[in-house]
Length: 138
Figure 1 (cartoon, one colour):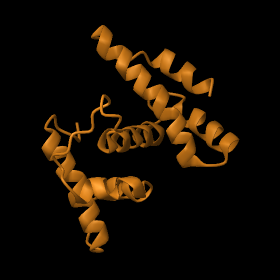
Figure 2 (cartoon, helix red, strand yellow):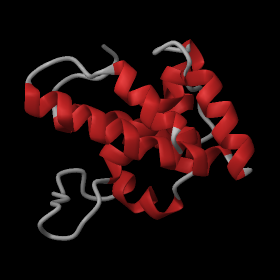
Figure 3 (cartoon, one colour):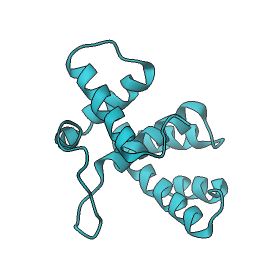
């Protein structure tokens, strides 16, 4: 697992990767992936350079930028490894249909989040068949 369970450590990983990127420093492959996702989301630059302890509650009407960027990283990893089998093809089809790979990831994130939420509620592993079907319906 590349990310731990500690929210502070995770957020610091984002902040460090972004700082290295901004300083034109040497990035590990994971740092480069994180920096690319942050670069793709200028609206979150303040979140990774500001107060890392800030809460982003749904009740407060806030989107958690770290969760959002983490879901992007998850989608990118799934596509790169084609796991679950068929996701790389589903991504290519959707990106071609939309004409924008980043926008395709955003659509896929909704399916991933729903699948993960259901799995958590049911205390079981995510259902890859249902997840892939949701992706194919996009």
